[in-house]
Image 1 (spheres, rainbow, N blue to C red):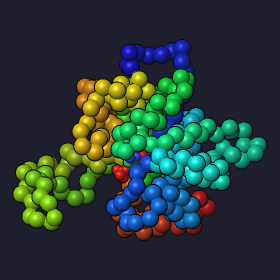
Image 2 (cartoon, helix red, strand yellow):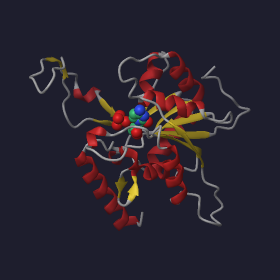
Image 3 (cartoon, protein in one colour):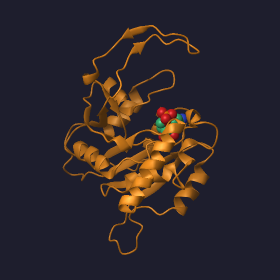
Image 4 (cartoon, rainbow, N blue to C red):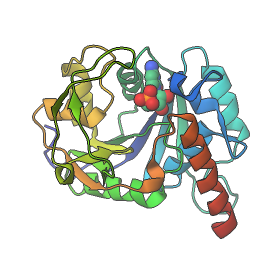
Length: 259
Ligand code: C5P
């Protein structure tokens, strides 16, 4: 069903933003998505990054389970692309739903909230607030051109080792060294034909902390996943040093293009 053309339905894209994580690796404090970057919560940057694409008709924010009201208030306080009167552009609609215990559950709850008219879905981490709109548009374009699952990705700078994990900083035996030129680090937004992603979330069971990557679930269905070039500014804000880098990127954008 998922790869049949649907000529009677024009493509309409929604972006689901899982933002329900605690962000413990960033240190103590508010949920990661609500922490400030350049004076504005990280989540607002992420929502703006999605809404900046004219192809995105709806943004679904998956809020911390006890933070849906706070998130709604935040969204109401901050201007979004398309808000400017007389711009001739209605911008994207917004929905806020409560998240779950794992990223995978949070994304599922976002998918459950999608209206019928949505044909394509982006899933974008709130923790990647600075992804450029060109990356968002290139993912959407590849999905609309017929790819059921599209992931922005970057080559790796570091060589990667597979290990037998050991606890508490103990030396870890190396199991393998994959060839670096064949590896990519994946980013978001990941783009999907809606039916394919919904089927993956319904059928694929992942143990432990759940899936950290939606495309990985689609792979398990046997559906092909393709990569398009990612962007270095689409990095994930995970550790304290990432915040320093994100502030520097924002400061440069403000200085050069009045962002
Ligand atoms: O923890 P990690 O950095 O992999 O989280 C990626 C994204 O998933 C973040 O935007 C985070 O807010 C979100 N998440 C979520 N619900 C959870 C855990 C993580 O929405 N229970």
